[in-house]
Structures are given as structure tokens and as C-alpha cells.
Image (cartoon, rainbow, N blue to C red; front, top):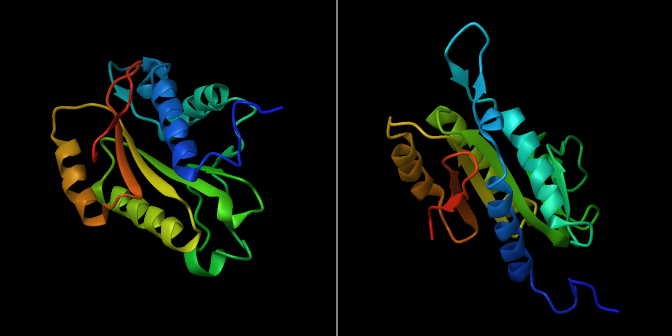
Length: 186
């Protein structure tokens, strides 16, 4: 019996495209509260990366389904990993999509930052993503930026991203709650 995924016939590219479609669908379900949290006693709201990531994980995990042959893990600590710790260090990407125990089946590594994060923090995450591509054999990497403002930050991020960009690394912007995230470097 062949399920929805026939592992012998699907390439990593096809699994990756399926994952991207699921990621876009998951973004459509994230509500304002998880995007930008109101602060009691003020009219202000703040971006909280962990809250956004947990909600994204919830929806993404549900959409991927149990028969997707890769596993979605959040903040998987690479401390003392016997094959990559010496090359990458104790990095904890926000998400990895992989088959645990098989370095040849690392599909996607993802870092997430709010749009208002400093360029320095975004560059640090881009460097981490490149290390996972080069040293841990991930098929693709994603820098996911979420949030919207009028300061032009997304243009600055895109400029910096061009220094790191290649076909293996995607810049995705989730501009508004309940909208599909957009791939910016296609």
C-alpha cells in the first residue's frame, strides 16, 4: 500500500516544496495575538519570537500530518552532537525538519526573527543557517521574518540577505497575521 508519500519516488526537492506549501498555509492561521502581543497597562504591543514560533509550530505540525516522512522539531539543541558540534557549536535553530539519526535526510533548517530585530541578530542567524547548510548537510535553509512596520527594515534585511543568498537559502516574510508568508528571493 502506498500512502500520500512514496519515499522511493519523491526527491528532497519535492518534499521541500510540499513543506513550503505547508509553511505558507500555516501562516494563514496565525492570529494577531501570536504575532504581536498586547502589553497590559499600555497601548503598546510587542513582538515575541517564542510565542510566534510556538503557534507556527502548532499549525505547521498539524498541516504536515503524521505521514510526512520528516519530523518537525523546535529548538533542537546541537550541544555535543557527535557529528556537527565541533563545526557548528551549540546552536539551536528555531526549527529543523529532518529524519532524526540520519544526516543524509536533513531537509530544512529555519531561523525566525521579528522584523524589528537588529540587523546584527539577523546576520548572526544567517551565518548559522549557512553553517547548517555547509556542515550539517541540510538541503535548504529559511530565514523567516515576521511583522510589519513602516521603517523600511525589510529593505535593509533584503540588502544584507543578498550577501548570503543562494538557491539553498530562502528569505520568507510573514507580513501580517492570517496572511500567507511570501518568499522574497525567487
